[in-house]
Image 1 (cartoon, rainbow, N blue to C red):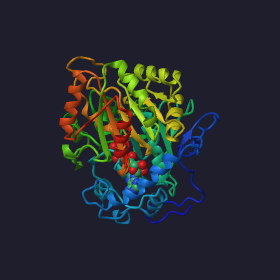
Image 2: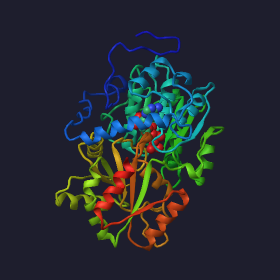
Image 3: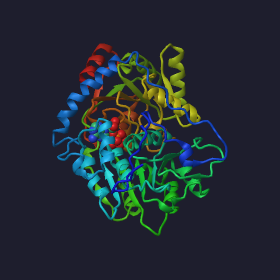
Image 4: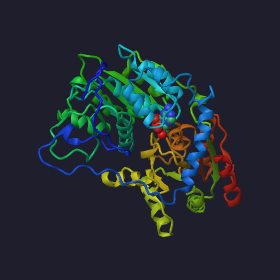
Amino acid sequence: MEKDADGFYTPKTEPPALPAAPTAPPATVVKPEDEPEAKPSPEASTSDNTELIKSTFEVTVTLADQQADPKSPLFSAKTFEELGLHQDLLKGLYDLGFSKPSKIQERALPLLLANPPQNMIGQSQSGTGKTAAFVLTMLSRIDFSKNKTQALCLAPSRELARQIMSVVVAMGKFTPVQTEYAIRDNLPKGATRITAHVVVGTPGKMIDLLKKKIIDPSEVKVFVLDEADNMLDQDGLGEQTLRVKNLLPRASPVQIILFSATFPDHVRMFASKFAPSANKIELQKEELSVDGIRQFYMDCRNEDHKYDILVSLYQLLTIGQSIIFCQHRHTADRISQRMTAEGHKVASLHGAKDAAERDSIIDNFREGREKVLITTNVIARGIDILQVNMVVNYDLPLMNERSNAEDARPDIETYIHRIGRTGRFGRKGISINFVHDKRTWLQMEEIEKVLGKKIIRIETNDLDEMEEKMRKALK
Ligand SMILES: Nc1ncnc2c1ncn2[C@@H]1O[C@H](COP(=O)(O)OP(=O)(O)OP(=O)(O)O)[C@@H](O)[C@H]1O
C-alpha cells in the first residue's frame, strides 16, 4: 500500500460492502484460538418493498429543495470539498450518495478538523447528520501506519454502536481503517489485545476492555460521545462514561467530542466540564423538533382501548415501517405476543433479550423484513432507519421510567428522540401519542408547551378520517 502526504494509505483490495460488520477481526484482535467470524447480515429481501421504494424516491426530490433552503437544518453554503476532508474520505462520502453537507456538518467539521484539535459540544436536530461529522473526524485523525487504537466512540445501546460502526466502515471504505466493537458478547473468548484504530461500543464493555488492558488507550486522540446528554447524565450512564474518560492518557490531550439533538440544562454544565474549552453549536428550544414530523394524539378510553386502537392502526403502520414505544419491557412483550396470536406480524425488542437476538431483531427490521417494531427506550436514540414513517408513543416517556405516580413528569428529551426515529434527513414522518386519562393528557400538554408545536387530535372511531389525515401528513 502507498502512503500519501497526509499519512493515508490507499487500499489495494475492494473494501467490504454495507451493511457493514467491523473489518476482519484477525487483523485487530489477537485471539488465542480460531473462532468463526461473525456472519455478515443477510441481504435485504426485495419482495414486498414497492411502497418503501416509492417513498424513498419521493424523498430525493424534496431533499434537494430542502438542502437549497437556508432555513433548513439540511442547508449548507459549502461543499464537502471545501470542508478540508481528505480525498479518500470524500470518495467514501460520494460512494454513500452524500452530495452536500448539512448545516451541522458544514459548521462542525472545520472546527473539528482544525489543529491543534479542540473539543466540541455539538447539537443539531434528530436525523440531520451528526454521525458523519464525528465519524469523519475520527477517520481524519488516525495515523493508519500505526496498529494502535486512536479513536474511541461510545453510544448508549449496542444497536446504536453497531449502526455507528457501519458508518465508520462505509465512510472509511477507501482507507485501511481497522475497527472493533466494545459491546457485550462480541469479542472472541480469551481475546488479549485489540489494536483496531477505531473502537465503538457501550460504556460498560469499554471500561471492561480498558481495565483488562485489552484496549491500550495510550495513543487515543479522539473520544466521541454520541447521545452525549444521555451518556453524561448522572442518573444514566454518566458514571461509567466518566470512568472511561479517566482511563484515557493524560500526557497528550485527547479531543473530546459530544453530540446530541438535546442538551437539557442539568447536563450542559457537566458537559462543559467534561469537554473543557469546547467549541459549542447549540439549538434554541423552539428549534428542537424537526418540522417534517407531524405530531398527533389519540384519546383512548383506557389501557385496553389503547391496545384495540393500536390493532386498528395496523394497516397504516405497515405502509412504511413503524416503531411503537412502551414504557416497560413487559408491555412490549405483552402487546407483541397478543398481536402475533391474533395474526399480525410484529417484532419486539428490549434490553432483556440476549445480544444475538437483539442483533437479529434490529437487522430484520432495518432490512424491511419486519415492518412493526414494538420496543422500549432502548432504541429511542440514534437509530436511523429511513423507511420508518410512523412512531407511536403507546406510553408517553416519563422522567422516572419506573414511575406511575400521579405527578410523573414527561421526559421531553426522550420524546424528542423517540419521534426523531422518523422524519430522517428531510423525510416526512408521523408520530402518534396515545393518551387515556387526565394524567397522560396533562403530560402530553406539557410536551406540547415546551416544544411549541401543535399536537393534533385524531378521532379514534373514524378509521377513514384517520387514514386520510395520515396520508396527507406523509405527502
Ligand atoms: N450530507 C448528507 N447527505 C445525504 N444524506 C446524509 C447526509 N448526512 C447524513 N445523511 C443521512 O441522514 C441520515 C441521518 O443522519 P444521522 O443518523 O447521522 O443523524 P443524527 O443527526 O445523528 O440523528 P440522531 O439525533 O437521531 O442521532 C442518515 O441516513 C445519513 O446517512
